[in-house]
Length: 399
Image 1: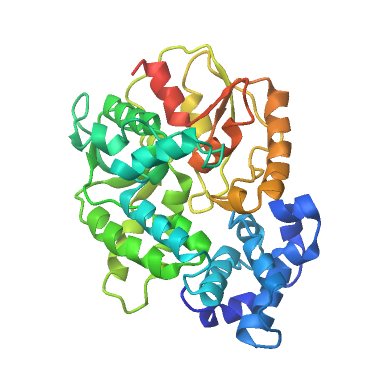
Image 2: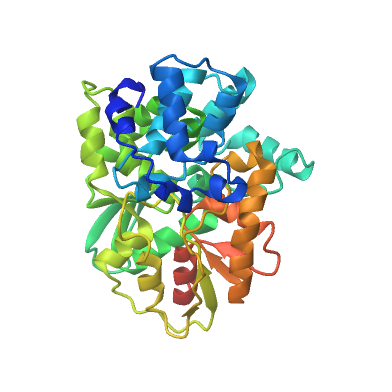
């Protein structure tokens, strides 16, 4: 993924069929052909591979106005990995310097500390209260997840499986309620949970920046930690984190890198937590919970074909809980990690359509496995709550 040349043949497979038109959130909002995957492939090839066109401000804008949602990659008949090509192109254009040095250093520190713990966490709280951070981001939790839970969480009964839990930045700093629900629900269903020490960010923010050396830095810390765990599975509550370890980790490393086999072996064990629970089954029958909810499917779920329906199947076991389906459950909300901060108006316009779909259901609870979606939707959904599916299951159990 560090070099565009290996993608040359894949880019040539784009037949301009136009199927990406139906799935690209940016194109569906501004209807500019240059923002379609097929146009981006042509531009990247002409500018960066053939050198026929210089790198211009407009080229950078076309490159940057991609959410890396992977929707086009999933619908492409030729299987062109558009998101990886965009990331490789950004890496070549910006060489880790897409942002100013201060922002890059803050991003690096954020990723290494999974959400600015300690003094930086306090500074984050102050910055939020003073209005210096985007309103879409909630204030940091008073106590991060890693300060509340550590080590081994025993199963409630006889353990039938043992998993390692990768705790993402948002769960650690912003939504420790999700992490608490994950370990409680797993333990309640006779699954032992190990929280490995030494975890850092999955690398997704750096991938979006095109800062592949920083992504690699994260992988060199995470892969040995997670691959070294004697567990049946590695679970995460975030679909973006899952995608990074399942589908991207090995590709961010050179082919002859000694860590690459470990990354490939780790990928075989990675699951999104509701998907894992749905696959292994519940041992504890949930009590009734008279609550209606709707489900927003996050974009980064193409790495597993069963995650779309896992929350539906799992929560369908809760008596009296009612799922009210969205008209377009898998339509992007516009967050795109930090995309909403760089293209505020465009992201807000994409979100408007998603919110209209949510409101027509009448449900007061929106469930999604993506913390970025959760943050971006919550500020404009004042009459309800946005949370993780596992939180609703924990609520049913009363844990």
